[in-house]
Image (cartoon, rainbow, N blue to C red; front, top):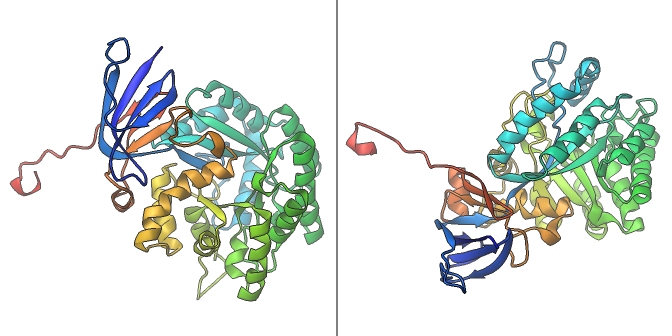
Amino acid sequence: MAKILFKNAKLRGQAESKDILVVDGIISKIENELKCIDENNNDIKVIDLNKNLTIPPYVEPHIHLDYVYTAHTPGATNSSGTLFEGIQRWSESKNNLNKDEVKERAKIALKKQITTGIQHIRTHVDVTDKKLTALKSMLELKEELKEIVDMQIIAFPQEGMYAYKGGDELVEEALKMGADVVGAIPHFEYTREFGEKSVKKAIELALKYDKLIDIHCDETDDEQSRFLEVLAAHSYIEGIGEKVTASHTCAMHSYNNAYTYKLFKLLKESKLNFIACPTENIHLQGRFDTYPKRRGITRVKEMVEAGLNVCFAQDSISDPWYPLGTGNLMNILDSGIHICQMMSFEEINNSLDLITINGAKTLNIEKNYGIKVGNKANFIVLNAKNEFEAIRERVGVLYSIRNGKVLFEKIPEVIKSNCDFIR
């Protein structure tokens, strides 16, 4: 029986630090001053967390791992910076995908994500490819890395279920092969009717194969793009809203307030989840504006205040849609609370929810997520004593613990100086 005692963990909402006893990878006790010897007087391995903030692992709910590090691929440069050119550039360059090459790029990104504290990832995978090369790569990677990261794979028709001939059939084939989530992109379909049809098809497939749903929904500045109401209404009717996610919803930024007020009633009743991608959408949206220029980020602040479940995501790492990105969710959180003007002390202190528990709820894993007795010992330790310090300093992760084992440990940076003032 393997035992390890993590002493002096500063848990969120707790005034005093706690000790966490882990037995065979499961949290056995969370108490004050637990003993370092067991009932047989055997020493228990101890790791002192020094009253640093200890939280559940970060959750990346929206990334495109099959696209990472393709921004410099010949023909993939997005000159206009728009969503639609990004899709066009990808369409023109993806025909030469190689399964091993896709996996290698994704592994580089995953290593960066994991070493910044992420243990749960949902990745979109483009299935508008008759060979399904990227999907096969991600399914293999999911199995290979399951001991260090949990991955959900979305069957995502990047070029549309119906704008791409046979796209709906490819989505269904991907679900049969093992994809976990049904995707769609209704605002990219050729007509509103096709967009609505794609939303309904996604729900139909999810019910048929017992899958989750995550739809790129209204990622545009067009205030007439209103597929969110279609998704919410049908999810409400089917009673599946907690398994459904609307990603981006950028058009909500441009909706008039009277319509939005009515929409929020439906959104609350439907129980949908929402994902905002602050850095990517501040880059992509507003491209057709002169001035004033819209930010294009969905109404995160108002949604949180209304009790809707919202989380933040990276979305892209150096691809035709976004040239930068590191996979570090603390950077995304910092940008997001600035862009969304969520900067009161209360909002800052609560903002870690946007990259932890809210993401877990979106991935439908919240029942087994969190630092609770009986759960797997999955948590991270931040280089800070409290939430505000962690956010203000954009601190790194000291430890990542998975199934009771140290996945990695980082030594804090030490400055060596010849100047007494900065020693």
